[in-house]
Amino acid sequence: MSSLLTIAGYGLREALRRKVFAVVLLLTVAFLTLFWLGVHFLYENLGNVGPPVGVDARTFVGATVFGLAMFGTLFLGTVLAIFLTLGVVCGDAERGLLQPLVVRPLGRTTLLFARWLGAAAVCAPYVGAVYVATMLITGLTGHWWPDHLVVPGVELAAAVSLIAGLSILGSVFLTSTANGIAVFMLFGAGLVAGLLGTIGHGLNSHTLERAAKIAAYIIPFEGLYQDALRELVSKTTGLTGFLLELGPFGGGYTGGPWVRVWAGAYFVILAALAAVGFSRRDL
Amino acid sequence: MNALDVRGLTKLYGSITALSGVDLAVGEGELVGLLGPNGAGKSTLVKIACGLVRQTRGTAEVRGHRAGSLQARRSLGYLAELFRFPGWYSADELLELHQRLTGSTGGSGERIELLELVGLLEARDRRVETMSKGMQQRLGVAQALIGSPPLLLLDEPTSALDPVGRRTVRGLLERLRERGISVLLNSHLLSEIELVCDRVVILLDGRVVSEGSPAELARPRGVEIETDDGTQLVEGVAREDVPRLVAEAVAAGRKVYGVRVLTSTLEDTYIEAVGGTTS
Image 1: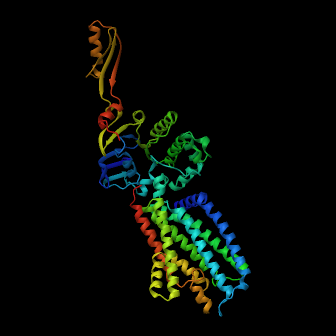
Image 2: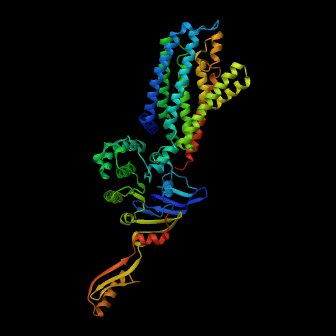
Image 3: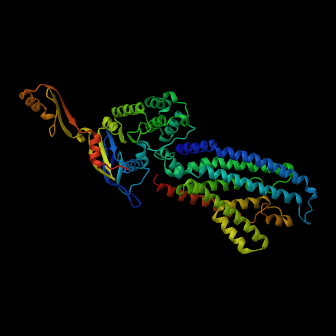
């Protein structure tokens, strides 16, 4: 346990010192400022919105802009998670940083798990903080609050932690650059699958919907994100709820408890694959 | 029990044979030098011993424990040929990190002692990123010594050091020997190996081609006699022949001013063993 915490602290300290962390913080400030401006003007002009009968404009705008903010949060969290972990094994081994640690009497699995813990300890609170900030901006400016306040934020943080795990698994087999590209492409694939699913939902295409759901299970960080969107407006009914499900940002239709259970199982599989791969790797 | 015991060690990287049936032992308190041209398999051997690389065949044991096992890693300190420490750590913080990882209870006393040993006590609070390569290498030696491991595996520990730094490390190795610590020293610097090692192992193409103490490996090259007739080299004779050669010279009416027994250097032996191979 002591070694685990030592390495996790090492990873945490490394993460906080890296330039990418400072860059993400700057981007976050810019993002939150722009978001506040956007929300402010949107609600200022809410009176000019003439929604169809049966649609609550305040809820529709609030859920949509907050859904957009959640996408931005996920994206920034993903950038942070990937850049903090893309070189944990191959990258650090090439630079000679890993060998002095691996020869110490701690298991390789412990080392990997500790590195994930260190990255998650940065990324998850970051995502949580941005989620709360955007929720406060939306709620205090537009007087609209999500149906569930906590669960969507926890799911976003879990999604980013999962991406960190995926990136660490990739780092066992790929060089830093190749790993970064691969994980970003997976993130992009998830995004496209989610959008296709939304289009399928709007067009009533069960094939597209099914394909998107399969994709959400193959890359469950996307499933968690979709479920977080769903949780935002899960108690919103009628035409407003239906329109929000058409998305792309306001609501979601994929998710439920199984996605969460599967995400947990998926992490265990990732961890096992990474541990086996790392144990067989010559450094 | 040997500190390191390697039997029939073979390592294949795809179709490339890095090690081919190597047998090697490092006894308790013994300082063994590992020599060989680039690509001979020296670093691979050291990496297998500390569990960074898995062997294809054969066995490697550290104090009776399988190399790479937790027990084996508890018994060794390692300095890699190519290593880097996180730049934001100070020398003291880095050693503290490794103390935690090894479970050393030496505290700041051990850290001060080790930094003093490698001549870095004044740089205790200096960040690694501001240190010269030589200072980092000495810091690397100090981190390898954390927890007083009974076996030290040093892969080119003096490659970035200036002559003074090399002398510091050489002195350090001699002190380690006095403390009974076993050392496997992989180095290209033959003079260094010759000066400090009890035994030398020469590797070529993944095989042991020569082994013995520096004295055993040094072959007689003859005797040089300085007389009033000039200096004469008598080949094919050894130290035992000196009294006879002097007596013969005196009997022949020569005045003998000096006699020198010539032996080959480790460099001569090395070049002979590897056949001039380099890469």
